[in-house]
Structures are given as C-alpha cells and as structure tokens.
Image 1 (cartoon, rainbow, N blue to C red):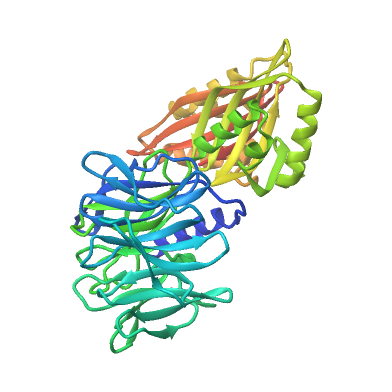
Image 2 (image 1 turned 180 degrees about the vertical axis):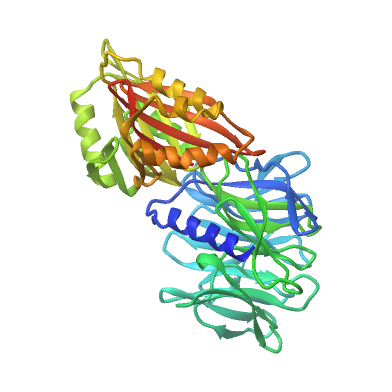
Length: 509
C-alpha cells in the first residue's frame, strides 16, 4: 500500500505545483459519512452554499446545522445551514467588518468567529444567537484560527510576523501561553481524550501533534503528505485528510502510514479542503474549489458580456495562452487583459457559444461557435483549470480535402477487435504518440506494434467506447471510455491527420 500511495501523492504534487494568486471561488459541500472496515463510506456530496465568491471554513453548530463563512455584498458573514429543511440563515451582518472561522461556543447558544475590520484589526468575537449581541473575547491577540477546549480555555493560532504561533488563551485568568511557533491552521479536539491536535510546520514538512493544554505535553502523531494542513477526526479516533478528491485515513492505534479510504467522484468537486465532521459522526462537510466547467462557463459568459475584469479574473496570474500544440502566444493575466481590450476595441459585435464539451479532470475541451457580425466560424479551446484557468490552447479550423474521422474510426474498430493489423493500418509509419504533458511516449509504427501486440494478447476483456467526439480541421478529439479486464477509465485522444493517416496522437488520462 505504501508504494501505491506514495506514487499517488507524487503524482498529485506534480499536478498541484502551480500557485494561484487570485482569490478562488470556493463552495461548501455536505455528505453522509460512515465507516466500513478500513474504508470511509461517503455518499454523493451536495453543494450547500451555491454562492458566488468565497464560501469556506465549515463547522457544525450541532448535528443538524452547519456554520460557514460566505461572501455577501462585498464582505464575508457567517451563515447557518439547516440540514433537514435545507435552508440558510445569516448570523452576522457587520457593517464595517467580515467574519471568518465560526465555531460553536461550549455551554452557550453562541458562536465565536474571527472578525476582520476594514482598518485591518483582527480579533476573536462572540456572537450570541439569542440576543444578537457581539462581545470581544481576546483583545490583545490577532487570532487566525481557534478551537474551544473548555468554556474558559481557547487553543488558537496567533499571527506574529509572517507565521502563526500556537497559544493557549485562558478567559478566566486572562493568561496567554505560547506553546510553539510556526503552526498550521487546523486545530481539533481529539475524540475520547483530553488532548487537542495541531499542525507543527518545519522545513521537513508538516506533522500532526497532540497537546495536553494543562500539562503542555506534546507528542508526534503522524506526518502529513505534501504539506497538507487540513485534517479532522472521526468519532472512532481515526484521522482523515484529503488530497485533491481522495480521502486518506490514519488510525493512530494501529496504523503506521496513511491509507486511501475513499474517492469522491461528485462531478463538481474540484479538490477538497477544510474538513469538518458533525458531533454524531454522521455528516462530513468540506470545501471545494469551483468546478472546472463552472469556471470555463463563467469565462465564456463574461467574455460575451464584455466584462473585461470579470473575464480576466477567471485566469491565473501566469496563465499561458497558446495555439495547439505548443505555440505560446503570451503569458500572464495582465497581458491577456491588454490583448482582449484591444480585441474588443476593434470588434463591436461578437458572441461565443459552446456547441460541444469534453471534461476530464482538470481539462475542459470546448468546441466553440463564434459569431462576429454576420460571419460565423468555429474553434476548439483546451483549458487546464485548477481553481482558475492556468492555460488556454486554441485549435483553429482549417479546410482540408479529407475526412479526418475515417482513420480514427478504423483504428477504433481494430482496437476493439484486437486486430493488430487493422488497428495500426490507419497510422503513419513515423507516427508519434505523446503524453498529457507533451512528452514523446512512442515513435514509429513498429514500436506501437510491439507494445499493442503484447497488450492485445494479454487482455481478454478489452473495449473502447466513444462518449463524445469533436472534429475540427484535420484534428479529431475523442472522449474514450475504456474497459480493460473489468476495470474502466476515461481518456481523451487527440488525433492529428496528415495524408489520411494518423500522424500524431496525444493521450490525456
């Protein structure tokens, strides 16, 4: 299991290495939670926020109500979601400030939250749910995150310079004890114990540690993969974290490493963070970045509306814009704004409609029908999206005298028949096969023959079904559903046709 998990983590590390600098739109999700042996049982997650902008930091007020921070009228307020009747109510509406990180205060019908005022002052407040009164809890600490240990003791992270320190704040005797410098944002009471967990950060990575707030004793629990710092505890004492849309679990009593516990396949879920579990353990809430297709839809909508700033905000700071496959046109959101402003200035009427779409992971491929005045044409745009659009690649239409679908369809039929000659017949002798990152995987038809001949002979159950096909110029893009000996997966094949032969193919998995 270790080697499989390690490879999984390294792959996701490579995928997520691009840092995004614009604030990403996020949503809060809710799902049922159960435990079956070593697996976490999670049903389809539902979006409980469905709100433009920042929706984040969920926690449970009780077994039927979820707290979270949400954008409203240019500021962030605290929302209460009622699970049974699926309704929302707003807890705060501070005119000159925003609230974050809401938590139930033990022994009271009240919520604590971080309040960030317009003048930059950041402090922890109490919000009474009966009277709507607000009271300052910690006057001298710039609290980032917190968890209640008792009615009088708060474990919190305090912002000092460019990091956070772990502080035990006692409301009764007005003392603040710094336990450790440089900690993460995730603080939790450990079930069935008198301990609190926190994240210790160092050059060697992040470590989950336990703290006894009275004796101040700390112990290592488990290191976190790839600097992850969002954890939570199940009622049975298991830790869970998420990498992308995969849930990992760790039981300190028996485990020595993280285990893959569940894959969340809800289509709109795009990476998971900020995990929270209800007191009875029946619900899991988490945060996801806006889905890839929603971001691309927003980009098309704002383009058509000529809302340049909103359009540009769909792209990352260092977005790469290019023609297929590797002809880079320019890099950067600011240059993109300049280019599109110039385009708008010389193009009074334009409309883009998406006629077909293929979506796989972080890749969205749109066939777009474009109208400029009384002229119409089509193009294909390939978007790589992770919270924002990191790259946009155009495939222009071109006139050709051949039908590019014929060789692609012939090789598909040969593939399904496991007929090596029929499969390779439509390929050029010097065909090149590329991977998702543009790396050359195979060159030459004889190298393809060697690989596929062995594959066909050792794979009794093999089938490829085309779920969607986009054709533009000499290029065919297939969304392929492939079954190999009972296991299925989806891939994208981009076939380039020259002289009625497949000259190049790029596979995205």
